[in-house]
Image (cartoon, rainbow, N blue to C red; front, side, top):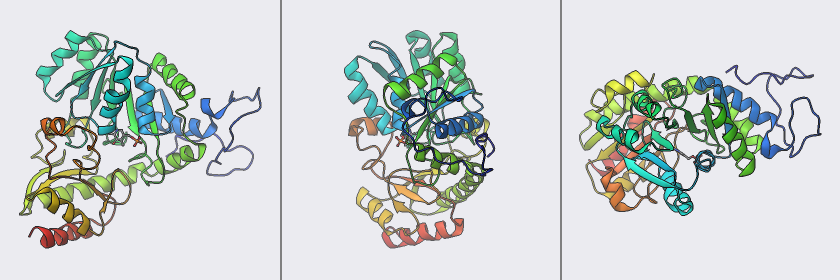
Length: 372
Ligand SMILES: *Cc1c(COP(=O)(O)O)cnc(C)c1O
């Protein structure tokens, strides 16, 4: 809450102004020159996110995808990225449809299995790319374990921390080199703008991120940076409620007839429950479940819900539901989807901060109508 201070100036305003300016008079004491390479609203957001991540530096971008672009564009043709196979769909698309054209190589592995870590030792990748929990399957990947193996061969490790948020998981403290978040999701938390951030303790990576922000034009709008910093002030309260609601809903779903599978990292039935409770301080707000029905009925169920809106994205105060095979992961080829376990009837709940009993009643009602 108190990370983003230091602007108070002459007025005593408790909240910072929005610095809607493209340029700055040269020779100003803070060294600003042009908003593509820095703005007071970026600096406020960056200092508070860095403090949340337990990192020395953070650099903000226009979106999570811009943040991914900043990191990957720092590599060069021929470099290898060793990636967890269950990746956010747009990350996969960026690797395969954009950066592959420039000679970047990406290999995908199930990094939740320690026997696959030998590939890091053998391949000495230019970057190891993790997500945990993964999208959309909520696999948990052992960040400290992988970071130790990668450090042995000098490979930097990036963790996409979007699903956990820096309130529940601090990858830099677990040994990762870079922690990336789409702040569009939990950090902002109000579904009113896009944003991304990369945190690190490594000065060379910090310089690469600042360079990418200005050289590739990946900077956010000052207003979006302001909105994100404002949203971030209530991150702790929101995350506590997301976690409590999601745990209650996940337990209820597990006991409900007509639900084939429920995945939530803080349920004892989750295959990596032990690792999840070591690595994260809460299970976050995402639940994945498979209803005992075909794809059409799963979509009909989504449309009958009143409190959950059928929409992409996650991490906002309002509950959303998504059908990954036709939405977030539609850009991943069907055979790849099946290989990583994204069945046609899978649903992803982004549990908001509404009353838990209302959310359960909404799901129960829609299930009675569509499934029984
Ligand atoms: C949404 C998301 C992104 C991309 O972020 P945008 O802000 O939508 O560009 C990257 N990684 C994960 C895990 C996400 O959920």
